[in-house]
Image 1 (cartoon, rainbow, N blue to C red):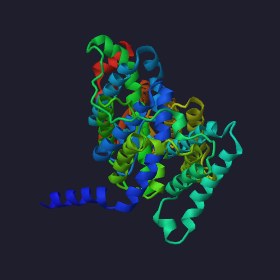
Image 2: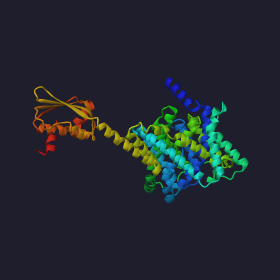
Image 3: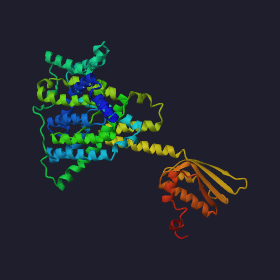
Image 4: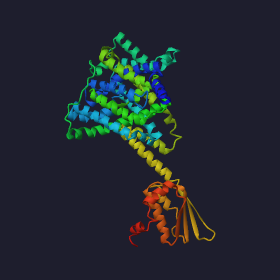
Length: 502
């Protein structure tokens, strides 16, 4: 009974704990989603309605199934870039099939608990990822500010002014999200004055019908699988990577935790739903998620409102939505870019270790240069791992002492023995010293891998060749287990094989 009441309270809090903030934030996000969904459809080479239907479907489903309340998922640029070749060579139906397979793969990854792998992503990689996305969001707005009339610059500047100054107004400034005020006010001005500037309607034709169930018209055979799997697998990986990174960022912004493995499954379910309603694969969007949080959105209702209102706007109010000036949405996205960038990381460069700065900057450079989020994070994690391994290996040393009779030498090993410190471990010993017995005390050390075990075997064998008796003391349980399994120094039959009969 207590568990049922707790679950009911948690569900009610997730959906209705922040009613006004979630509704208003959802409206802002819905308006900001429209041009992005259209733009990503164009990138993928499909009709704008494919991205809009996907954004509606993914947002609504993830509102119910997601592991991170308040996070916005929809069609994204990172995913769209991976679809270009598939659409060009095989067409829309194969894209829908790839979207379904992407969802299945993500659900499997969720059950394999791959969301837990986020613990291996260091803070410097997350910071680099955030900064890179902030830069990409800003760069994506530049085409709207290139070769345009002064009216566009004036509208964008006015939009930024509204966004940053409106919250300073007493009472009303805190009650209504300033991005929503920016969009509505600039749209009204553009329509009244009759400004000849680019609008949402200029980006592509908005749909005028609701999405319908659509099973991909492709043959269900091995050939189809061979065509879509090379696209579905990277789509699944990139989608989960961006979603989990975004969830981590929203965790920080809201000071709450999220279920990463549940989010993996949720993304899969949402993509299956999108594929069955004629949409493309998508994932979490850091820009829209930041808009949502900054506008006061915290619960699942904000995500549901964003997706539902998006569909209502483009299907039933498309004539009005088409009038929204792109300058207003550019102002909102510039605000997102500024708010997303971790400015503290610039100030911390002088204070943080060089390795931390290299990881952060490398992640930024690779993501911005390649527009490949997965590659940037991979490079960042790889560098962070190498720097960590190198740092830990330097904390490995041994204190040596000899008894009063000069017959027993004791080595007290400190630190972590693994592939990168194995050579350093061997360098701590004097194998040419003439002593009767050598005691290797490893009570303050830990052996992690086969390389470490091999180093210990080598040390013992070398001492024995010099005629010294060797005793190993202080092994912890984990080290003893791996040494018993892979070590040969205390197994005569295995030692004979290693020594080759000599």
